[in-house]
Structure formats: structure tokens, C-alpha cells
Image (cartoon, rainbow, N blue to C red; front, side, top):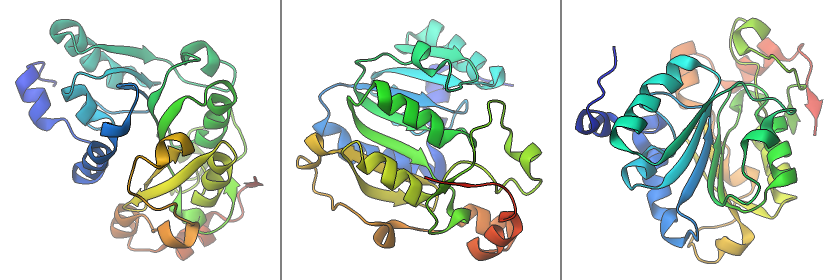
Length: 243
């Protein structure tokens, strides 16, 4: 059951990890040229750019699950939240139809699957984003790998643990460095923040290397009572691509 009251919703509107992502973005947004965002993969009251909705940024929210899209679509219509919401399962074939070529501001992706390959397509058509947020798979440790592209990938069908998905932090560093983005922050072993070089000097953050930034996933380790070494050993027989 969803409550469509704007005040009720805004009180509960957070990012992951007790809103640490949203709070960190608040430190970065003063340097943005464009008050816009594009987020792929979100929940009704949990997504990285949630604080920006409260600040009346214009944004795009994309998710393949209708249950995630419907309530915020209704809120958007009733309360004029300045959002465009797309219920679509993104692939390498359709991403360019969805993402505006000249859109700047913030880009975020968390789809627990083809994240690396979708981001690669995005960067091939749009490098105007000033800040990019990705969810990395800490279970891949220091390897520079991604799962192979699979059009209809579902993590729990791929392996019952749910640990086989996405790409490693090193894979994202390599990809985004090649497009002039610098790593500035990781949070809870889940999300990594990158800033374009043209925007980097405006912010007082260091350009981090893997060794400075890598964290194991706090929540994954807690609920599974394991660590990244155990997690990797569990899925290392599954196909991975060095990128």
C-alpha cells in the first residue's frame, strides 16, 4: 500500500544506506551546471537522486519493474514533481532511445545486472554528465571484470546467492577513467561516485585509486555472515569478462 501524500512521501524519501548517498550528493550539487538527473534502477522511496526530487530538480527515472514506477508516476502527476518516468527494461539496443544525448547533471545506475554494458553504451553517446554514480559488485574484489552481457539477465536466476551480477570497482574505474571521470567516493561497499574532469577542480575531493576506495559490501557481509573472499569463491566458476 502506497501513500500518495507529498509530505508523507518526502519525509520517507531517501537513498540507500540511511541516505548517505543523498547527503554526499548535497555536497557536490553546488558545482553542477545543470540541475538535472537521470537514474536507472530505483525504488518507490529509495534511490540515489531522491534528495534532488525535493529540490525540484528535473529528472528521469527508469526501471523495468512496473511496481517501482507506478506510485511515483502518480505522485509526479498529482504533485508536479518535474519527473519523466519510464517503465522499461533497458538493454544495449534500446538505451539510446531513452537517454537524451545532451542531458547533463547527474547519472546513476543500479540494475544488478548489465550495469557495465549499459553504462558503456551511455558513455558512447553522452559524456555531458558531471557526476556519475554506479553500484559496483564488491564480491569481485580487485578483479577488473564484468558479467558477460545477457539481454534478459536476472541475478537470482543466474545464481541463487545473488552475488553474481554487475561489475567490479576496478572495471568501472577503467571505463570511466577512459572517459575523463575521476573516482571521488565509495559508500558502504555499494556505490561509487565519479566526477568529470571539467567539474573536478570545483570540488575539494581527491582522485581516488582502487586501493584508497574499495570497501566490501557492509550489508551483504552482515546478512550473509560472509566476506568478499567467501562470496567470490562461491561464484568464481561462473563466466566473467576481463574488461
